Amino acid sequence: MLPVNSDERNQRSHTLLKWGPFVVICTAMAFVAGAVILNDGSSTVEATEEIAAPEDDSIGAPEPTGLMPITYDEASEAGTEEDRDWGEVCDTETGQVKLPMVFASPCVPVFEDDNGGAQSPGVSQDTIKVVWYKPDESMDLTALLGGQGLDETPEDQFDTLQDWVELYSSVSETYGREIELIPFYATGTEGDAVASRADAERIAEEHEPFAVLGGPRTDGGAFAGELARNEIVCLGCSLALPDCKIQDIAPYAWGTAPSNTQFIATLLEWMGVDEGGSGLTGKAEFAGDPVLAASERKVGVVHFEQDPPIMGECTGDNWGDEAVVEPYLLDFGAMPQVAVEIMAKMKSEGVTTVIFMGDPLMPIYLTNAAQNIDFHPEWVFTGTVLTDTNVFGRQYEQNQMAHAFGVSQTGVPIPPESYGGAMWLYKWYFGEDATPAALSQYQVVGANVPRLLRGIHMAGPELSAETFSRALFRVPPLGGGPTTPQTSNGHWGFFDTTDYNGVDDLTEIWWDAEAVGENEIGVEGLGMWRYVDGGTRFTTLNPTTPNPFVVEGTVTNYEEAPPESRAPEYPPPAGSPAAG
Image (cartoon, rainbow, N blue to C red):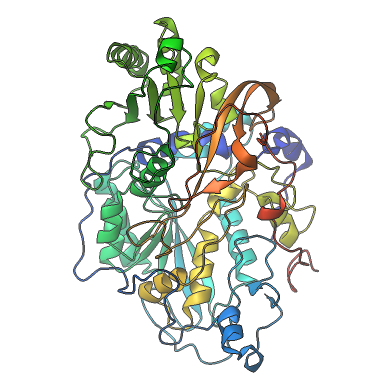
């Protein structure tokens, strides 16, 4: 039954939801240790025998194999679209299912045959077993939100996950099978590799699922590696894994964000570090010190590091011999003093441009330390772990931030209840008066559901990890508008290796210390990130030329999704709560 929250709870949370759920801010700290590693390195993941990516690595969509369905666009190109039943959920004008989001799956024919029964672990005649991994409570958003009046139970989160599965299943072909969700509660902290591996073994032995949604983020890949050894797909397991380790256990570990290797490759193209890049070269013209601004750029990099270190196995040295590279540990008590030492070194070694890749708290100490020693470099923020949010940007020293620019992985913010927003989609299916039980976490809880259903939809009745991955490789890149980052998998030319991750593109941002507006939790104040060229995004194939501190053409947010991020409007599917 659809959970509906009380009026009192809705009133308490209204402000927090204006520009997105409060989870956008608070879950950052749970991801820090995995998401902001600068250089890829060793982990406890071990390759399993004969685990490898599908062999077809040519650019574009691989051909369907076995019983994989043809898509409407493929049939149309062959002139055979009239020979098949595409069903009521197919929009033959777009070739996509009638989901009012730009991430809608391609249409496939209605399936009415025998699905062949059991195909692989967790796949039977009638069901597809999927385990939902619930992290240790100490790293969960509920603990962080206890003082906000938005604390939610695991049951609330699980109910919300089931809602998302129901919504996406309504526009997906599942070949006579239903998703059977099973909750699993972690037995150790997220950095406990021994507990993580034991949890994965227990999931495999007790539940034998086809897939797991979520996993530990700082266990060095122990959880994902053990699932791979048991031929179990894990969506949302590769956040902290370097790209080389993802390839080792392919096609089992999938991420929602780009791998570190992918992110750095796109960043460097924008900076012009690699030959052919578009150019953050020459003089440090955006520095706050006239002497630095007239000097040739010398890069300093500050990045989070783990203990023991995980440097360099996959990517090696990204910045060249002249760069000053300073790692730091996520030790909150020590960070203020470490920041003082780092900034003193940057100044003494003639750094003009500080690139930051770390957690959202360290820049508080770094920018204040720089101000205290009269050091005014260019600041290049890379959008790691919500350093590109206005909530955190306002906490940094504003004289320093007046010279801050960089890139963001996320899209320009829109209110979640506006057309194309996550809350709007929820209400589109469940009804205008409906709200998810996990009101502060509803987007994160359902983050891996669209790809799960898309892979099943495109794989056909013969469902396995191999057909699932090839199915996702066959979906052309989706999104790419100002509010909707582009996602793709496989080989579409953006990266050198097979892509098992999420976002492909970035957008340029700069900090306007004079702009006034509401931040992500509805507080109006001074200082906002501006998105260059209306939030236009770029990939490794078309990097833009950095153009910060020019107000014309920039935006700080949209009241609704712009045309590039909008899908056609559709009525809710028949049988949905909203349709009656």
